[in-house]
Every structure is written in C-alpha cells, then in structure tokens.
Amino acid sequence: MPVRDVVAALLLRRPPNRPVVVAVDGRSAGGKSTTAGALHTAANDAGERAVLLHTDDVAWRQARFDWDYLLVDHVLAPSRSGDAVRWRPPAWIEHGRDGAIEVPLGTTLLVLEGVGAARRSLAPLLDFAVWVQSDTDVSYERGIVRDCALFGRTRAVAEAATDEWMTEELPHLTADRPWERAELVVAGTDIAVTGGAGDLVVAVRSRLLAN
Image (cartoon, rainbow, N blue to C red):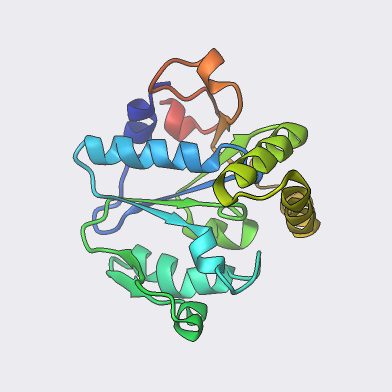
C-alpha cells in the first residue's frame, strides 16, 4: 500500500477533538523508526498535523521498559482529552536535558514509536497498533551495524550493548506479544525489494482499515 493510503485509512474515522493515536512497535533495529517516520511525513504532506514521539525519549535515563505509566499520565491521557501536552520527564529535569515532549492543540495524528509502544498496558489508549515484523537475527545484525556507524563503536562493544538490551527486550516481547493486537503488520526488512518507493508492504488485519 502507498504510505499515503495507509495514513488515509488510519484517519478515516478520526475523532473530532483529539488526535488519532497510532503505536508502531517492533524489535530493535526492525524498521520501526523508518515506518513511523514514513507515516509522519506522509500525514504532514497531506496537510495533517502529525506528531512523532519516540518512546526512547520517555525512557531516557528512566528505564528501558518501566515508563508506560508516565506516558499514560502525561501524554496519552491528556492528548485523548483534547488537551495540549508540554511535558518534561522527571529524568530530563534531573539530568538537565533541554526541551520538552510536546503534542500541540490541533494535532490530528500522534505516532508513538518504539519497542513497547503497543504494549498491553497502553492498548486502551491506542486507536491502532502497528507491528513491524523483522526476524530476530536480521534485526540483531542490522542493529550492530547501525550502532557501529552511529556511535563509532567496535563490533565487540556494539554486541555487548545489544546483548545487554536484549536481556530486557526479549522477555518483554515474549510476555506481551504486541503483534497479536496489531491491526496492521508491516514488513520491516527487504522493503526496497518487495515494495516500491513510497510503499509499505503490509498485512491488514482490521476490517476498519480494509473497508
């Protein structure tokens, strides 16, 4: 499907006074950021007011996965009530990080991206859950290559950091199984081969999207 068509389907039955909330979940280095970024860009290109929020910003110096209550209280609940959000997480204040997480009034699409974005505890506050599918070995290797390029790490250091992260990611995903609640499953690997420019290779599981 063209990304613009996916966005149009997500916004087809938008609520009148709050953004549509879409969570993009998947494995580390599995294609989540690319997928979420494509949705965000396509929405803004179509004249929508879209906001992209990375769960890494909520988790920053907080915890790898114990942050959902903060997201609910300070972002999702007020956004769904039609209120503007400008929130500085406690760890940002404690460690002197500048800026804030913002969801302005008039936002029509809020894209929440990250491992755990579509977790069970957030499900009641999500309009749609998207799972970006990638095989574990593929995403693992892609993450190592990415970290070496981005952070100048040696492969050994990148592997050690990834393995440490996986000690929490794997149990979380195994227990939570967010793919089972996803209305849309997106291919996170080999997109350039199986899909054209501006396309997402998808499996649609929701009649709301299919109609």
